Image 1 (cartoon, protein in one colour):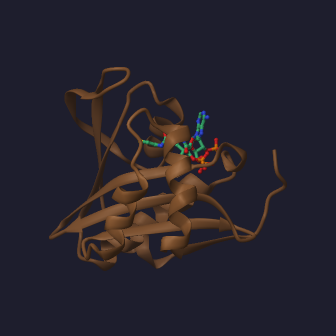
Image 2 (cartoon, rainbow, N blue to C red):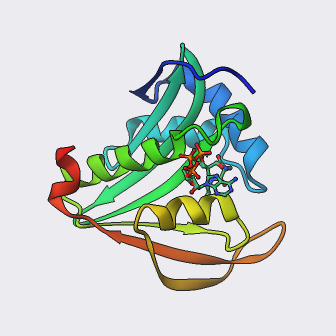
Length: 157
Ligand SMILES: CC(C)(COP(=O)(O)OP(=O)(O)OC[C@H]1O[C@@H](n2cnc3c(N)ncnc32)[C@H](O)[C@@H]1OP(=O)(O)O)[C@@H](O)C(=O)NCCC(=O)NCCS
């Protein structure tokens, strides 16, 4: 495990994408590709951010905001940087971005078997609102739909 480094959150740029596509492959059975991530650079409803630790890409998060709803589509942290608060910080940024863009709720899907992610979201006040049958592939698994109601006060820290 690496020593804790100074971490900054920056908007995703083209230069980050090759490493993020690798992170996707490490984490997911249906990873987002370089091309899919690249397309979001020009999408006005998409907000993708990267956590850089001493200039190295440590993790990232992508959120879509449409009208009063927002949706976290991507979040991942490289194994060497996990359990250092980055996931929590990235979701905190998602809340800030969602509120800034007029959203009143933030939703996402997660595999029920993904204990680290489920614990992260429940610790941040996300609540289960539904289940998408067979949402995930390889292996097939339902998707838990979690939602957090956003309060303006959350953005004033
Ligand atoms: C889920 C993920 C983003 C969490 O990132 P992280 O930077 O390790 O998360 P944090 O350090 O901010 O953890 C915050 C809290 O989440 C929970 N948590 C995180 N990892 C955990 C684990 N392995 N086991 C149990 N709880 C865990 C804990 O409550 C933790 O607080 P604590 O460290 O004070 O106990 C990371 O594990 C990851 O990238 N996983 C692979 C990709 C993925 O599954 N993404 C989610 C798709 S829905």
